Image (cartoon, rainbow over all chains, first blue to last red; front, side, top):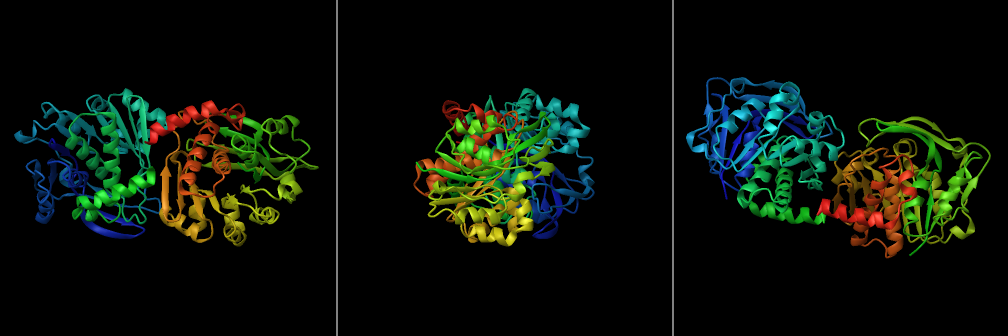
Length: 300
Length: 300
């Protein structure tokens, strides 16, 4: 087992879906990732929050033994995202993005973080992702996510980042946007040619495509009967994926990559069953193992 | 092994996709279905063509020992469909539908067809699907497909049909339209409550959802690197599905239903690699078995 370092957003989200809405609920990629990954391995967080960030929200991660030394509290307000989903829960519609303290986020790692072995660079400015990576001395495994905004506005920096990571996790629309190729077989091939040893394309309820060293592994997501809020599903997937790999701690073997993806799907399936982080708060291994058995029934 | 009776369209299609176009190529659900299903079992076709239907197009099915006694040639022109696909090959855009001789299609089965055990009612007017079914004395297994047009215009007749079939094959958008439920877990449950013992929702490159007796089986399609033309993929899936079940001829056991779906996916993956029926013309078992092994690698 090895520690995982994650850098990403820590936020309050206001979300409306066909099944309800929540105002300023706890969110952000680093929170979703940490809550899931900490089920597998110790997690260290790099991020920034404002003066309005509630102590109980820090406490949530502390109860999971997440190391918060790298989470800075500064003057100003916490990042706030407002979005909604229509019937097609695979696509978020952003209504408002208030960067607040996140605008001047300039991640400096505590000394104790610099020897981290597993590093996940969640979806933030690729320049900052590189900056974090520069501060880790000898990472064993580096993963990253990104989004349409950075693909548009910071493509050269993103391509630079791709050369330095082992695994890219990206959603299907973004894989198409980044490569200019609609076909999934072609786009994952292109993405690995740009650097990463493995690419995982996240497809919402349609699951994922894993591609590494010329091989594909493709599965649907666990079929959830009531998706209340898909926010954080991708970051939960990443948490399960890196959580599994860091726990096994044997690199990127094909069987481990496959298991990592299945753990990613499994954990994400809980996230979408309730608003925000609610479903992850009390999640324990017996429930996960129970669903793992159900998931295997569905796909075998 | 048992014979399969299929009723459906026999057509000429004009198709444009991002990878090319073809004018008046052989198509129609009954042709796609028969070419695939005849790889497994003897097939009997019920349909209608016009005076312009070419002998070589009849010959194609005859070389596969397809029984064409139920394919009537009448005065007028053969059904013609013109459509195109944009980058998203999962959705056809209809440009023109010339029903021609199909407009007055009134299927009367040859006597030799009335004892057919496996019956596939491809996507035609549900009143005609019922009419065909009425002429089969003791079918062992009945399947049907439908489309948005009939869901809108002949809903009561379609619901009547559902009570009389064993398996419904339907695409995802149509399952949503028919049930009014977006969530796949909910919509397949509703569909089985309306009659069929099993429902298969076809999802294009995302594969299928099989639901029967409370159990789900979900897999992606085989990843095709170059989809030239998705026309006929659903009917090819149905051909592989019913072909397999009729060959095994043991009813609707869960393991056989699963295998039937995988055979459907496998056969459809060839269809989309070339325009119209081209990829199915010379298709032989060694190529299918080779791809079956590759497909199993991708999903296991």
